[in-house]
Structure formats: C-alpha cells, structure tokens
Amino acid sequence: MRYRHVIWDWNGTLLDDAWLCVEILNGLLRGAALPPISIEDYRASFSFPVVNFYQKVGFDFADVSFDAISERYISAYNRRRYECSLQPRVRETLDQIRAAGIDQSVLSAYHQDTLREVVAHYGLTDYFTHLSGLDNIRAEGKLDRGRAHLRTLDLHEAAHTVLLIGDTSHDHEVAAALGADCLLLEHGHMRADRLDACGVPLVASLDEAVEFVLQEQPQPR
Image (cartoon, rainbow, N blue to C red):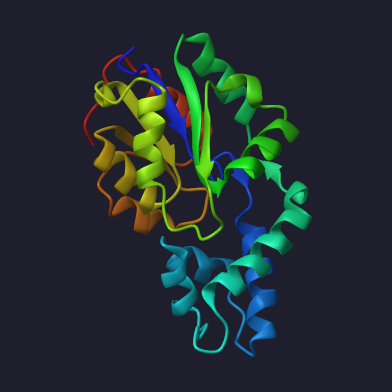
C-alpha cells in the first residue's frame, strides 16, 4: 500500500450533518431578521474560517458578536447532534481500510471533548488510533491542529504516506500544508464543482474512496 495512514474529517465526511447545519443556521438567521438559505446555497458558499461564511450570509457582528452566534449555534447543534446518521457504508469503509493494515484517525473542527463523545456514540472509537478536535468553538480551521496530529502519530516526517479524506476545500488546504495527499468526497458540506477546483481526486461515495485508498499506486488526476 502507498498509504500508511488515513486521516478522516468527521462532519460531512463520515457524519451526514449538512442538513442539520442548515436548519440551525436558518434558525439563527430568522432570529436576526435575515433571509434563510437553502442546502444548495449553503453548499455553494460554506467556507473556513466560519466567521467569513457567517458574514456572507448576512450576520452583522457590530450587532451580535461572532462568539455569541457561535455559542448559540453549537448549543443548538449539540442538542440535536444525534439526529444525524453516518454517511452510507461508513463501517464497511473503515473495516476494509483496517483489514488492509492501514491505520486511521480523525482530524475535525469539532470541539475535542465533543468529538470523542460523538465518535463513541456511533460506535466507531475502536477504528481510530487518535481523535483530534479543536479546543474552542470558533471553527477557525484545522491547520495547527493538523500539525500536532501528525506529530502525535509520529508521521510528521512521513506525511507523504498519509491520505487526508474530507469534504471541503479547507481539508485540501490542510493536507497541502502538511505535505499529505488529499481525497475529497462530494457528499458533504461543499458542492462538487467547488471541490473539483482544488485539483485533487474527487469521489462521489465512500465505496469509491476505498477503491482509491487501496490502490497500490494511485494514479494522478
């Protein structure tokens, strides 16, 4: 195998939660007398850091601080987080990669403690050697946490043997900064055309992701 380790994003990639994010966001928008957005609009404009995305959809931080909006969002999300399902064939995917002798971990913009809880809730903890989340709720990005994640895995000098799988352009940015390969899934928080612009392999399903991971020599795009 070319890859020794797969780093998974969580939200959108393994957990199907974009619909819930839109519902909660629309509640916040209504509270601020702003128009709601559709799931299509969300996937067309969602980005990291999330503060920029919130400004795009109309929030004025002169009226209410970004921290206050973030706290309301996270509180609402956490109350409903277990309404979400895993993406189709998550367990089969993780099983196949583990059976190939490739280690797996999670790097997420989720809060660290919440990440551990939610991964355990879905019965997936044993698949991963490490879970890395953030220490705040601002969702500013995962680059610094990603560097620490590689050091924890003792792969910071072998990043070329690591594949990061995610569903946003930020996952591509993180992988590039770490020196890891990247594979993007189009079933999450960003539209396929936006992901395609990143210039890295893009797949429609976890079954296709497994095929890519298990290639001995992944072909250039």
